[in-house]
Length: 241
Ligand code: 13P
Image: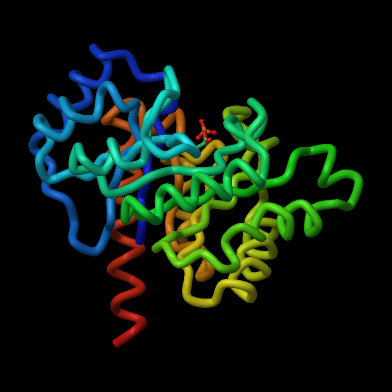
């Protein structure tokens, strides 16, 4: 079971330090892969404070290192000991990242041996106009010949930060459809995940983990989701025996 947090640009330095202080006693469950995608500025300090945790970057440049003011290269990310990268988040797509640009970012990530969490998801308009599968097919195309290690996060845009979670039927329907295309790839769900709804979402067989935004900012809510992820991981291990 994967439990990934995405702090976006929403975590202050003080907030990150409080998180680290509160989480310092936690010993990660080997059955739950926990990781936080943090701002590149916060990652080194977080890695120092929470040595048992993994931290990933939220984006990388599509360019090789060179004269690109304001960008962060995949190579630099890996030089800091970071192994994971989030790509294709709908907030980055909304800010203008095209499939073509994401394809180049994927190449840079592969060269730097970064593992990817690649996000896909439809807008409300796309869903209402019956373009869900077209949208997902287009967004997943870049992964078809991708030789980097990756997992996929399905995050319907209309569920992100809105308090509206997709119904279990909808999540299962989309996850099974993605799974048919990428049979061996773990598929995470993201979009208004919180302690109250996380157990039932993780209870779906096709859900390989969660990508949590707002509820990952504070240790008290992430800890609850981590405990539920451990329970679900144990159930799955029992069933597999
Ligand atoms: P929320 O959990 O705040 O809806 O954010 C989800 C998300 O975008 C994670 O990448």
